[in-house]
Image (cartoon, rainbow, N blue to C red; front, side):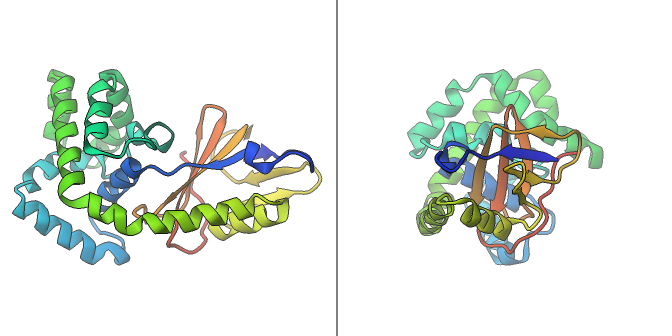
Length: 251
C-alpha cells in the first residue's frame, strides 16, 4: 500500500501533488510503444508507418539494435523531472553527452536484464560490456535522428493534449473531492481515507508513505497506469487517452 498524507484545509494540494511533462520523455514513450511485439491497437497504423519510415531513412537496422533497451520499459535517463527542459536537438545532444555513463548504464540495466530473461543476449549488451561510452554516443545519435526526422512533428501535433491535461490537473488541485475524482478517472483503485487524510493506492511490496505524488501524463504510453516509488516520491505514469484501470506496481 502506498499512502500520501494530504495537507490540511489551509495548505495547497500543489505542495504534494504535481505533474511533469517532457518532450524527450514522450519521445522515449513512443519508442517504447514502437518496440512492442504487438503494438496497442490505437498505434497499430502509426507503428507500421514509423517502421516504413525507418526503412526509408536507413534507420531500421539501427532501431533493431536498440529495441532491447525499450521493449520492457522506458530508461530512467528520460525521466521527465530531469528532461522537461530538453527540447531542441542541440539540447538533447548536450544532455546525453554530459550524462554520466554510469547513470546511462543504470537506467537501461533493468530493461536489458528483462530482455535477456526472454531472449538471447543482444548485440548491444556485448557492446556495453566492451565500450559503454561508444553505445551511449551511438544511442544519442539515434534518438537525435529520430527526433529530427520523425518525432518533432508528432510532438507539435500532440502538445495541445498536454495543455488540456495540465488544465485538468490544475482544477483537480482545488480541493480533496476534485482531486479524488481526477485520480479515480485514472484508476479507481486510488482512494482517499477521510479519517487519516491520506491518499491510498494498492501496491506490491511493503507499505510506505510517499512525500509527494508526481503525475506523468503520456500520449504514447498506451499501457495501464504504472505506480513506482522513487526515493520519497510516488510517480504515476498513465495514458491520457485511455480509460481508468488498476495501476500496476513493480513486484
